[in-house]
Structures are given as C-alpha cells and as structure tokens.
Image 1 (cartoon, helix red, strand yellow):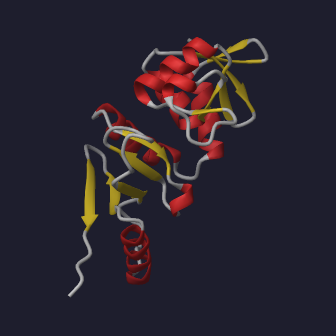
Image 2 (tube, one colour; image 1 turned 45 degrees about the vertical axis):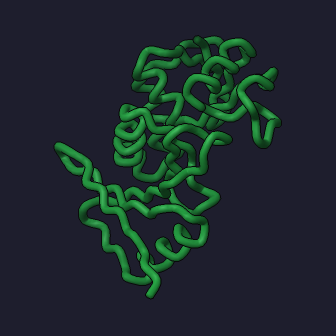
Length: 177
C-alpha cells in the first residue's frame, strides 16, 4: 500500500486500499465523510502521522513525498516536529494498537487518544488516554478536570506513563455518593 505525505497528513489515494484499511482496522478518516460506514467508502483516506508511522513500521505501507520514498527515520523526524512528546505518545499508541484496540486522536475530548474496543460507528470509545512523562507534575485540578470531562461523556480516563521497560496505566473511576 502506498501513501503520499502532504504537509502533516498522509493520503491513500487508492480507493480500494482506503476502504480495506478503514474497514479492517479503522485507520484514518475517509475524506469528506463525517460518520463513514465501511461499505460506503468511495474516497481517499487521510491518516494522521502517528498512524502512518505505525503502518510504515509494520511494513504495511510505503510513504512518498513528491514521488520520493520517505524512510522510517525521515518520518520519525517529521513526527517529532509535529507532535509534542512524540516518542512517548507513540509508545502508548503502539501498545494499544498491538493489543488490537482502535486508537483515534482525542483532541475533541482534550486528551491524546480516544480508544475503542471495536471501532467508531460500532461502539463508543470507552477510554480517553492522556500520556505523561514519569517526571511530569499532574495537578489535582488537572485530574479533576479530566475526570469530570470523561464522566460527562461516559468514558474512563486513563493516564499512560511510559517508562524504560513498560507503560504504566492509571485508570481513574469516578463515583457519586
């Protein structure tokens, strides 16, 4: 499969490959389709850089820019420029994807990732994930704000803290008395 790097996104122009990639694993978003159903896809697919890097690392696709092949190292440098704390976020993204979860950007929820068990349109994302470094200070106000947001949209808030050997996950559950 081939993608084209345009600014900070990757486009898969082949409609058949776009449909296949979205239908099988919910990568990317079909261009111009708000709530796509896999069988309705008849447009190119647009991927975030983190998705493209994962697929490149897994040898699922090649990425080109102005007809020149982009190496993994070149894409890594681009990702590091575009994403704050890319290496840590990628470890978390990769961990969830390797465990067969569907991972989408969580920007509309004010976090790093929205994580699905089955996929958008099939179920709602039960988890909102925020990536932190081990040395980050997390204020109690920040935790309460994240918890209130997650609760208001009926999701669980998870702090992901990548270390040298493993990723620690802290799930926060809110109770009402």
